[in-house]
Amino acid sequence: MGFVKVVKNKSYFKRFQVKFRRRREGRTDYYARVRLVVQDKNKYNTPKYRMIVRFTNKDIICQIAYARIEGDVIVCAAYAHELPRYGIKVGLTNYAAAYCTGLLLARRLLRGFKMDNIYEGVVEPNGEDFTVEDIDGQPGAFRCYLDVGLARTTTGARVFGAMKGAVDGGLDIPHSNKRFPGYDAESKEFNAEVHRKHIFGQHVSEYMRMLMEEDEDAYKKQFSQYIKLGITPDDVSIKYGKWFGFGTAGIYGTPSDLAKI
View: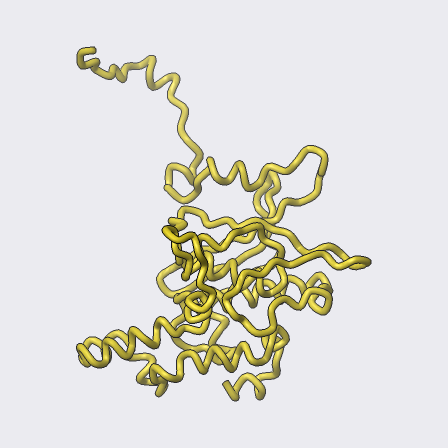
């Protein structure tokens, strides 16, 4: 077949239909959105909740929302820029911070629905697979679906860190462990210890030590805020460990308690 010239004449432009604004801006994947918001017909007006995770250069945004014709309704939200009040003052966009933000969102949401004492989630994070199960005689576990937006869902991506935090916090989010750090696609095995290291920020500690030995100037430049706050490679996992040590109730600790972190 030869070359066919595309004729964009008056007839073409009269029939041209522009795409949705957020598609034109490259902000929404409507192919994915349709599948996330469409509810089963036998559930009538029951909201279909989504856990929205978005990353900016300096922040992590986690929200629980459901769709309505007039627009999405945000039920609950948590942000990484809230973490400094809980003792985590630097590294607000790494995997560990994503986990903490997801955990904060889950506990805040369940507390709003008065379900925080029913579904306590994982008290001590261990990186292992965990799924919330309904409790007889109690309201069912809060189910929502992960909305990653335009982010690439590669193995070890931070969006799954936020999701893991929400799951460990007591939310029911359908998932598998194939995208968590520690999963090997060749052997099809999952190493929970590798995942635990990422949750506690130990991968950051290892990189800090490596950079400190190989290029001290680069270390001082990249981790200047850590140095300013007196945080050494050994302190990173300890900081997260102390925060997790409060358990899921630690997010509601008093300022004096959290100051000890």
